[in-house]
Length: 525
Image (cartoon, rainbow, N blue to C red):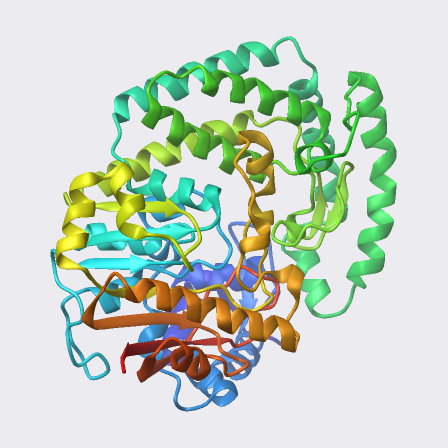
């Protein structure tokens, strides 16, 4: 006879067994995701003690131990920031818009703030200093510099990246944003009254609820998949085909248009016709907004919204494969899922979330200067470009010079930085300069690509040195698997004085294998 424990009893037993606090939520998670079997019905849920023992024996080594076994004992676990929850690593404006390849704010703060520890034995930047990020991305360095009272300049070749960064550090009339977003939401709902897609989606969800409860009961289905009692691929495909006639009947009933008339652009290819119509409707409303800061931040809300409404499966959000315009078996959720047929829910959700995050950042922000300039960091004249937008700040930089750099350069052949936001380039009409990216995905990782990358990064550092103080500190975050950075430092007339190897946790990519990056500390030769 198996010894059965209630969730509360399991929590108490596991806490003693592991000598650490195991909450009832931890036990519920194991049940929900099929790690251990659920016995009984809701309200009388139990788990087998033997299954818990087996699970903990297989998974009880710490993440730090497992990662050091794979990546080496020189891994600096302090810089993993594993003690932070996900909402802390995406705090306030850092999550205004998705962005591949950004680092967490705690890493920036570690090197910019005034603390010291056994790894960071000196203070590199102080309040009132100026820091440069020549690969600004989504503006993490700018935001954290603001929190610490440090002036910051970003540069990015991508106009949309600069748009994201400047939106994060911008100052706003929050009430005006709230009122304007609410007015657009009202107009969108009125617009939807004349269309069938909301009624269609409501009935589709009801059909899916019944079908999934019958063929993909949770958490039993996930547990059987984990135990290999069900061949997930074969079973999922079979049930996917069974549901498709129901889906097509509803499409016909409500006369829903799925495909657009052309597929020339990203917006044409990756959005259903009903979604595209709503995108265009909201975009036209935003174009009529008179207040520029409000227009800017609501354009970010729309961009974030349409990214969530692409016609793709939940498991392909980061790596688009083919447009998905029918219901499908979703490996991520273990049931039949559907594409979206209205932006209404996401627009409202992200409007509310953005306003909340702007308010949070307002309580922390300082009066320091931050801006992201659009341009090529290999040759941009920072003083001149800054003078056109912030003359007083430009004079300060000219007189005092920049104290150092904190940046994460692109990795060799990993991301196409313009293409990841292709939907927004299409919608807003920003000029694309893909050919000026350093180390883009489309150039690959071969010898020629690596040499071009090394020269590109070195040229950025050489150009930046014109504006740096003599005793500067440069910190570059890189996964240098090709060993290029010693050569880059030499080409730039710099020397690597220290390096910190850190594990990268909480990655969103499908590949969750142990992964590290190095923070190179460079100084003048």
